Amino acid sequence: MTSVLFDTPGPRAKRRNVLYTAAFLVVLAALVWWVYTAMNDKGQLDWALWKPFFTGSEAYTTYIWPGLQKTLEAAALAMVIALPLGAVLGIARLSDHAWVRVIASVLVEFFRAIPVLVLMIFGLALFAQYTGVSSDDRPFYAVVTGLVLYNASVLAEIVRAGILSLPRGQSEAALAIGLRKGQMMRLVLLPQSVTVMLPAIVSQLVVIVKDTALGGAVLTFPELLASANTMSGYYGNFIASLTVVAVIYVAINFSLTSFAHWLEGRLRRGKKSTGAVLGARDVADVAGSAATGADPAGSLSDLGDITGPKK
Image (cartoon, rainbow, N blue to C red; front, side):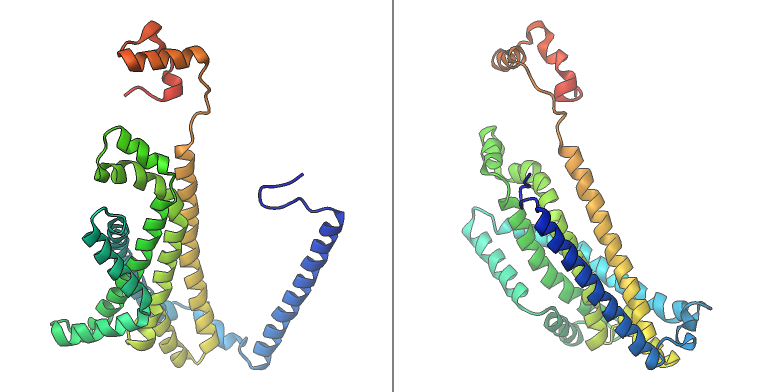
Protein backbone atom coordinates (compact mmCIF):
# COMPACT_ATOMS: atom_id res chain seq x y z
CA MET A 1 0.00 0.00 0.00
CA THR A 2 1.41 3.39 -0.97
CA SER A 3 0.66 7.01 -0.20
CA VAL A 4 0.83 10.00 -2.48
CA LEU A 5 4.09 11.15 -0.88
CA PHE A 6 5.86 7.93 0.10
CA ASP A 7 5.70 4.15 0.07
CA THR A 8 4.32 2.46 3.16
CA PRO A 9 7.32 1.16 5.14
CA GLY A 10 7.88 -2.56 5.30
CA PRO A 11 8.92 -4.62 8.35
CA ARG A 12 12.62 -3.68 8.12
CA ALA A 13 11.83 0.01 7.64
CA LYS A 14 9.46 -0.06 10.60
CA ARG A 15 12.17 -1.59 12.80
CA ARG A 16 14.63 1.08 11.68
CA ASN A 17 12.09 3.81 12.42
CA VAL A 18 11.51 2.41 15.92
CA LEU A 19 15.27 2.28 16.48
CA TYR A 20 15.76 5.86 15.29
CA THR A 21 12.89 7.08 17.46
CA ALA A 22 14.30 5.35 20.54
CA ALA A 23 17.76 6.77 19.88
CA PHE A 24 16.34 10.27 19.46
CA LEU A 25 14.37 10.00 22.71
CA VAL A 26 17.51 8.85 24.56
CA VAL A 27 19.51 11.78 23.19
CA LEU A 28 16.68 14.20 24.01
CA ALA A 29 16.40 12.87 27.57
CA ALA A 30 20.17 13.20 28.02
CA LEU A 31 20.05 16.79 26.75
CA VAL A 32 17.19 17.69 29.11
CA TRP A 33 19.05 16.11 32.03
CA TRP A 34 22.23 18.01 31.16
CA VAL A 35 20.34 21.32 31.05
CA TYR A 36 18.62 20.53 34.34
CA THR A 37 21.84 19.62 36.15
CA ALA A 38 23.70 22.64 34.72
CA MET A 39 20.98 25.04 35.86
CA ASN A 40 20.70 23.34 39.23
CA ASP A 41 24.47 23.53 39.81
CA LYS A 42 24.41 27.26 39.02
CA GLY A 43 21.51 27.82 41.40
CA GLN A 44 19.11 28.87 38.63
CA LEU A 45 16.39 26.55 39.91
CA ASP A 46 16.32 27.99 43.42
CA TRP A 47 12.82 28.85 44.56
CA ALA A 48 13.81 32.42 45.42
CA LEU A 49 14.43 33.16 41.72
CA TRP A 50 11.05 31.81 40.59
CA LYS A 51 9.02 32.97 43.57
CA PRO A 52 8.01 36.39 42.09
CA PHE A 53 6.08 34.64 39.30
CA PHE A 54 4.11 32.29 41.56
CA THR A 55 3.47 34.08 44.84
CA GLY A 56 2.44 37.60 43.86
CA SER A 57 1.33 39.86 41.04
CA GLU A 58 4.00 42.55 41.26
CA ALA A 59 6.13 41.04 38.50
CA TYR A 60 3.15 40.88 36.17
CA THR A 61 1.54 44.26 36.89
CA THR A 62 4.80 46.22 37.05
CA TYR A 63 6.86 44.63 34.28
CA ILE A 64 5.24 41.89 32.20
CA TRP A 65 1.79 43.35 31.49
CA PRO A 66 2.98 46.87 30.47
CA GLY A 67 5.59 45.32 28.17
CA LEU A 68 3.07 42.88 26.72
CA GLN A 69 0.68 45.75 26.05
CA LYS A 70 3.33 47.61 24.04
CA THR A 71 4.21 44.46 22.11
CA LEU A 72 0.59 43.74 21.21
CA GLU A 73 -0.12 47.38 20.32
CA ALA A 74 2.85 47.61 17.95
CA ALA A 75 2.18 44.19 16.41
CA ALA A 76 -1.56 44.80 15.97
CA LEU A 77 -1.06 48.21 14.36
CA ALA A 78 1.63 46.82 12.06
CA MET A 79 -0.66 43.94 11.05
CA VAL A 80 -3.61 46.22 10.34
CA ILE A 81 -1.50 48.41 8.05
CA ALA A 82 0.76 45.76 6.47
CA LEU A 83 -1.99 43.33 5.44
CA PRO A 84 -3.97 45.65 3.13
CA LEU A 85 -0.80 47.39 1.92
CA GLY A 86 0.75 44.03 1.06
CA ALA A 87 -2.41 42.95 -0.75
CA VAL A 88 -2.43 46.16 -2.82
CA LEU A 89 1.25 45.79 -3.74
CA GLY A 90 0.82 42.10 -4.57
CA ILE A 91 -2.12 42.81 -6.87
CA ALA A 92 -0.29 45.78 -8.38
CA ARG A 93 2.57 43.47 -9.39
CA LEU A 94 0.05 41.56 -11.51
CA SER A 95 -1.30 44.69 -13.21
CA ASP A 96 -1.56 44.89 -16.99
CA HIS A 97 -0.13 48.43 -16.82
CA ALA A 98 3.65 48.31 -16.97
CA TRP A 99 4.21 51.49 -14.94
CA VAL A 100 2.07 50.17 -12.07
CA ARG A 101 3.77 46.78 -12.19
CA VAL A 102 7.28 48.28 -12.26
CA ILE A 103 6.70 50.72 -9.39
CA ALA A 104 5.17 47.99 -7.20
CA SER A 105 8.01 45.60 -8.02
CA VAL A 106 10.67 48.16 -7.13
CA LEU A 107 9.02 48.95 -3.80
CA VAL A 108 8.57 45.29 -2.88
CA GLU A 109 12.08 44.22 -3.83
CA PHE A 110 13.67 47.27 -2.16
CA PHE A 111 12.00 46.96 1.24
CA ARG A 112 12.19 43.16 1.22
CA ALA A 113 15.97 43.34 0.81
CA ILE A 114 16.58 45.64 3.80
CA PRO A 115 16.74 44.14 7.31
CA VAL A 116 13.79 45.18 9.43
CA LEU A 117 16.10 46.52 12.15
CA VAL A 118 17.70 48.94 9.66
CA LEU A 119 14.23 50.14 8.67
CA MET A 120 13.41 50.76 12.33
CA ILE A 121 16.60 52.78 12.84
CA PHE A 122 15.88 54.84 9.72
CA GLY A 123 12.33 55.37 10.95
CA LEU A 124 13.60 56.63 14.31
CA ALA A 125 15.91 59.12 12.62
CA LEU A 126 13.14 60.20 10.25
CA PHE A 127 10.67 60.91 13.05
CA ALA A 128 13.36 62.70 15.08
CA GLN A 129 14.45 65.08 12.29
CA TYR A 130 11.37 65.68 10.18
CA THR A 131 8.36 65.32 12.48
CA GLY A 132 7.14 66.70 15.76
CA VAL A 133 6.65 63.30 17.39
CA SER A 134 7.79 63.36 21.01
CA SER A 135 10.89 61.44 22.05
CA ASP A 136 8.76 59.09 24.16
CA ASP A 137 6.60 58.05 21.17
CA ARG A 138 9.34 57.87 18.52
CA PRO A 139 10.43 54.28 19.32
CA PHE A 140 6.84 53.06 18.94
CA TYR A 141 6.37 54.81 15.58
CA ALA A 142 9.78 53.65 14.38
CA VAL A 143 9.06 50.02 15.28
CA VAL A 144 5.66 50.09 13.55
CA THR A 145 7.15 51.78 10.47
CA GLY A 146 9.90 49.20 10.11
CA LEU A 147 7.50 46.31 10.62
CA VAL A 148 5.00 47.68 8.11
CA LEU A 149 7.53 48.38 5.35
CA TYR A 150 9.27 45.03 5.60
CA ASN A 151 6.28 42.78 6.22
CA ALA A 152 4.07 44.51 3.64
CA SER A 153 6.67 43.69 0.98
CA VAL A 154 6.81 40.05 2.11
CA LEU A 155 3.01 39.81 2.25
CA ALA A 156 2.86 41.27 -1.26
CA GLU A 157 4.87 38.30 -2.54
CA ILE A 158 2.61 35.92 -0.62
CA VAL A 159 -0.49 37.45 -2.20
CA ARG A 160 1.04 37.39 -5.69
CA ALA A 161 2.14 33.76 -5.31
CA GLY A 162 -1.27 32.75 -3.96
CA ILE A 163 -3.09 34.30 -6.92
CA LEU A 164 -0.68 32.80 -9.45
CA SER A 165 -1.10 29.35 -7.87
CA LEU A 166 -4.72 29.19 -9.05
CA PRO A 167 -5.46 27.36 -12.31
CA ARG A 168 -5.57 29.58 -15.42
CA GLY A 169 -9.04 28.29 -16.08
CA GLN A 170 -10.37 30.41 -13.24
CA SER A 171 -9.24 33.62 -14.93
CA GLU A 172 -10.34 32.45 -18.36
CA ALA A 173 -13.79 31.50 -17.09
CA ALA A 174 -14.20 34.85 -15.36
CA LEU A 175 -13.22 36.73 -18.50
CA ALA A 176 -15.46 34.50 -20.61
CA ILE A 177 -18.58 35.53 -18.68
CA GLY A 178 -17.73 39.21 -19.15
CA LEU A 179 -16.08 40.15 -15.84
CA ARG A 180 -13.59 43.01 -15.89
CA LYS A 181 -10.10 42.56 -14.50
CA GLY A 182 -10.98 44.21 -11.20
CA GLN A 183 -14.15 42.17 -10.81
CA MET A 184 -12.28 38.97 -11.64
CA MET A 185 -9.67 39.73 -8.98
CA ARG A 186 -12.22 40.72 -6.34
CA LEU A 187 -14.91 38.12 -6.96
CA VAL A 188 -13.03 35.09 -8.28
CA LEU A 189 -9.29 35.03 -7.65
CA LEU A 190 -8.86 36.61 -4.21
CA PRO A 191 -11.58 34.58 -2.43
CA GLN A 192 -10.11 31.33 -3.75
CA SER A 193 -6.49 32.24 -3.03
CA VAL A 194 -7.13 33.16 0.61
CA THR A 195 -7.08 29.51 1.66
CA VAL A 196 -3.78 28.98 -0.16
CA MET A 197 -2.20 32.10 1.33
CA LEU A 198 -3.47 31.73 4.89
CA PRO A 199 -0.66 29.57 6.38
CA ALA A 200 2.05 31.84 4.97
CA ILE A 201 0.19 34.99 6.08
CA VAL A 202 -0.12 33.69 9.64
CA SER A 203 3.57 32.76 9.67
CA GLN A 204 4.35 36.35 8.74
CA LEU A 205 2.07 37.65 11.48
CA VAL A 206 4.02 35.54 13.97
CA VAL A 207 7.20 37.15 12.63
CA ILE A 208 5.69 40.59 13.27
CA VAL A 209 5.02 39.73 16.92
CA LYS A 210 8.55 38.45 17.45
CA ASP A 211 10.26 41.30 15.60
CA THR A 212 8.88 43.86 18.03
CA ALA A 213 11.68 42.66 20.33
CA LEU A 214 14.21 44.30 17.99
CA GLY A 215 12.81 47.69 18.93
CA GLY A 216 13.33 46.94 22.60
CA ALA A 217 16.90 45.79 22.07
CA VAL A 218 18.05 48.79 20.00
CA LEU A 219 15.49 51.61 20.12
CA THR A 220 14.60 51.49 23.85
CA PHE A 221 11.03 50.56 22.95
CA PRO A 222 9.51 49.26 26.22
CA GLU A 223 8.11 46.01 24.82
CA LEU A 224 7.92 42.61 26.52
CA LEU A 225 11.55 41.52 26.18
CA ALA A 226 12.87 44.92 27.29
CA SER A 227 10.58 44.77 30.32
CA ALA A 228 11.93 41.31 31.10
CA ASN A 229 15.48 42.65 31.10
CA THR A 230 14.47 45.37 33.55
CA MET A 231 12.61 42.83 35.69
CA SER A 232 15.57 40.44 35.79
CA GLY A 233 17.81 43.27 36.96
CA TYR A 234 15.40 44.04 39.81
CA TYR A 235 14.87 40.44 40.96
CA GLY A 236 18.27 39.07 39.95
CA ASN A 237 16.71 36.15 38.02
CA PHE A 238 17.75 36.56 34.38
CA ILE A 239 17.09 32.95 33.31
CA ALA A 240 13.75 32.75 35.11
CA SER A 241 12.55 36.05 33.62
CA LEU A 242 13.50 35.06 30.08
CA THR A 243 11.84 31.66 30.54
CA VAL A 244 8.54 33.27 31.58
CA VAL A 245 8.71 35.71 28.68
CA ALA A 246 9.48 32.86 26.25
CA VAL A 247 6.39 30.99 27.48
CA ILE A 248 4.28 34.11 26.87
CA TYR A 249 5.63 34.46 23.31
CA VAL A 250 4.91 30.78 22.65
CA ALA A 251 1.35 31.16 23.96
CA ILE A 252 0.66 34.20 21.76
CA ASN A 253 2.11 32.69 18.59
CA PHE A 254 0.51 29.31 19.24
CA SER A 255 -2.86 31.04 19.59
CA LEU A 256 -2.35 32.79 16.25
CA THR A 257 -1.37 29.53 14.54
CA SER A 258 -4.26 27.59 16.09
CA PHE A 259 -6.74 30.23 14.97
CA ALA A 260 -5.29 30.09 11.45
CA HIS A 261 -5.65 26.29 11.32
CA TRP A 262 -9.26 26.57 12.49
CA LEU A 263 -10.03 29.30 9.96
CA GLU A 264 -8.35 27.42 7.13
CA GLY A 265 -10.33 24.28 7.90
CA ARG A 266 -13.55 26.27 8.03
CA LEU A 267 -12.82 27.91 4.68
CA ARG A 268 -12.00 24.57 3.08
CA ARG A 269 -15.18 22.98 4.42
CA GLY A 270 -17.19 25.93 3.15
CA LYS A 271 -15.86 25.42 -0.37
CA LYS A 272 -16.71 21.73 -0.57
CA SER A 273 -19.61 20.80 -2.84
CA THR A 274 -22.48 18.57 -1.83
CA GLY A 275 -20.96 15.70 -3.79
CA ALA A 276 -24.26 15.14 -5.67
CA VAL A 277 -23.97 13.64 -9.15
CA LEU A 278 -26.23 14.76 -11.99
CA GLY A 279 -27.66 12.17 -14.23
CA ALA A 280 -27.73 12.35 -18.02
CA ARG A 281 -31.36 13.56 -18.12
CA ASP A 282 -30.64 16.25 -15.52
CA VAL A 283 -27.67 17.51 -17.49
CA ALA A 284 -29.71 17.64 -20.69
CA ASP A 285 -32.53 19.48 -18.93
CA VAL A 286 -30.16 22.03 -17.43
CA ALA A 287 -28.42 22.55 -20.75
CA GLY A 288 -31.75 23.05 -22.50
CA SER A 289 -32.91 25.51 -19.88
CA ALA A 290 -29.70 27.50 -20.15
CA ALA A 291 -30.07 27.70 -23.93
CA THR A 292 -33.78 28.58 -24.13
CA GLY A 293 -34.41 30.18 -20.77
CA ALA A 294 -37.18 27.64 -20.11
CA ASP A 295 -37.44 25.23 -17.22
CA PRO A 296 -38.78 21.98 -18.70
CA ALA A 297 -40.72 19.87 -16.24
CA GLY A 298 -39.44 21.96 -13.37
CA SER A 299 -36.05 20.31 -13.64
CA LEU A 300 -34.18 23.27 -12.20
CA SER A 301 -36.55 23.40 -9.25
CA ASP A 302 -35.98 19.72 -8.62
CA LEU A 303 -32.24 20.37 -8.46
CA GLY A 304 -32.54 22.86 -5.62
CA ASP A 305 -30.92 20.51 -3.14
CA ILE A 306 -28.01 19.95 -5.52
CA THR A 307 -27.25 23.40 -6.78
CA GLY A 308 -27.81 25.06 -3.44
CA PRO A 309 -30.58 27.13 -1.87
CA LYS A 310 -32.72 29.25 -4.08
CA LYS A 311 -31.78 32.93 -4.20
